[in-house]
Image 1 (cartoon, rainbow, N blue to C red):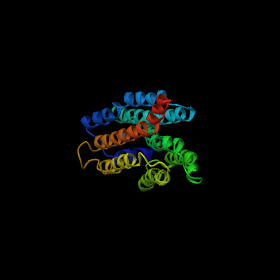
Image 2: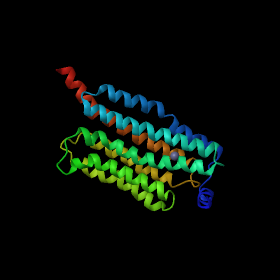
Image 3: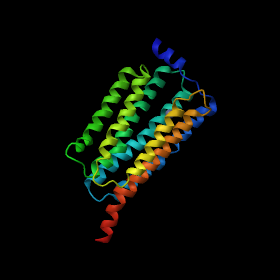
Image 4: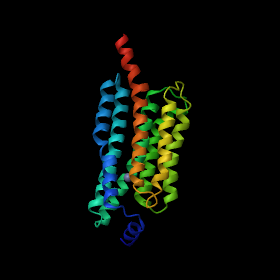
Length: 229
Ligand SMILES: [Zn+2]
């Protein structure tokens, strides 16, 4: 309990307006991501498209839901340190599963090389590994945590680059740039007003670009093909 309290005490305490902005900037996206996931599901032309739509939709919605729950807890029940800490852990775990979910449609629906195709399941093992790390060492080694996210984001990108069909890679990279630039704000709590809410917006824009690419390059071509037949 002592470590929990001291960790929470050293963390930046947002103002009331910042708390509200932190909740709103991710809470707003819960409904659109549910709708977005459903749209992909209904555009699916086969079983694999449907599974990928489910995984991706769950990852996307899950991220915004856990983030909103955590920020609401940090705002309204911050005196219940243990509870807030649990929500914070869920928020951090959801990021790992969100990254896995974001890559999944590309890994599942595109043709990959004999080695690269193993990333389809490996990415979920990585997400479980990252979450297990969060469970045991949450907030203890901040650099290791950041490196975990960077590895999770960068390693599958190498596999994506080996895809036979490269359409969409440009959008994937652009979305990735938004996440990376956003980290600057993630690390600027107390230095830049509303830094965390700005980080949330960068995440939302990155996720939006990735959603567009998945819809445009992985789901729409199947629909067009069906209509032409
Ligand atoms: Zn947040």
